[in-house]
Amino acid sequence: MQVTSSTLVAVFAAASLPLAASAQTAARPQRPHIVVIVSDDAGYRDFGVQGAEDIRTPRIDSIAQQGIRFSNGYVSGPVCSPSRAGLMTGRYQQRFGHEMNIPPKFSEENGLPLTESTIADEMSAVGYETIALGKWHLGYADKFHPLSRGFDRYWGFLQGARSYFPLKKPTRLNRLLRDREVQPETFDYMTDELGRQAARYIEQRGDKPLFVYLAYNAVHTPMHATEGDLEGVQGEARRRKLIAMTHSLDRSVGYVLDALDAEGIADDTLIFFLNDNGGATNNASQNGPLRGKKGTVWEGGIRVPFLARWPNGLPTGCVVDAPVIALDLLPTCLAAAGGARRGTLPLDGVDLLPFLRGDASTSPHHQLFWRHGDEKWAVRRGDWKLVRQDAETPRLFNLRTDVGEQEDLAADEVERVADMQRAWAAWNEQLVTPRWRYGRKKGAKRK
Image (tube, rainbow, N blue to C red; front, side):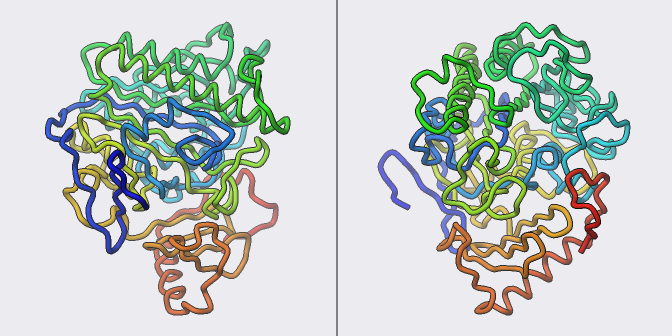
């Protein structure tokens, strides 16, 4: 990687040096506002800062330009609901059976288990006002509702997808809610409205610091785009809509950034932006140079755009190559808030602040694990990744030299394969059987 006068590049790998803290970190706010922004089904390459050539995303790019881009940022699941369950708890969701997407029907049982403490529970306990907006997808019964899981306020919908335009007859799962009250569908376009609602909460905040979880459904299907956003966009029909939807996503994120600026709190706000899983195929997203897509444990299913910004608390203009994962958000946000955790179950995520400020010289994670269903699993250790996809013999790749996972080195690294497979098996022994099996092939048995 090239280091220029305007960009400090730090690589957290086995033989790397720690990231040097910038001069701006001297005055570290004790209790920053925190905003976690999650996009949906976007491709790894589908943002300007990620190398997109046909999509402009200046507002999202600015988060990286004024903060940190994690080039090896991961989520703990390759589909929507499990990924969110991991982010929300800081724990591998397979530990508590939230391994598959929740079936799209009402259930009193299917949802993020009540035994788990959420990031909102933790932030609320240390004095934050907690607000959730957008796609929930962590359960439909009242006990799974955001207001039952640590959030003080909510504006959004419970299901995993819905129309971007107002519905004439919304269902119990996709209707629009403010807190627990059904709202009239009077907005123009969901992506814009989510940004406006988030900005409004920021502008109307009280004396407490804010924790905002803004979960877009963009750019998940259905492929709905406004005529204004489609104007001037070229390309194949689905890709054209994807580009238009991404432009609206970028604009909506801009509403949030503008509100922070207008309120004079941008420098004292920690922002995370990431996608929930790899890009899908039904929305024409692009994951290059990664192999695979949403639903796989190839890099294209689990490595995502992952950005952070906190002008008064973290270095600016940096790229970090060490593997990090969405599980890290809970302990990092709690540490930034200066609070002690109330939950007692062990976390799998780690506080990233010491690594980002140069107070730690090792990589945040020795190894990371994935399991999705009966035939898909992976383990990453350093530059090496062992992956089993769809009942194949496990394959080994060196991601530093082969990010596209094309050259299987298993035959040349027999001992490494055996050691990594033992490590995965030991982790797998700690997990539980999925609580539901939505999307599982009929007749398949766990291996």
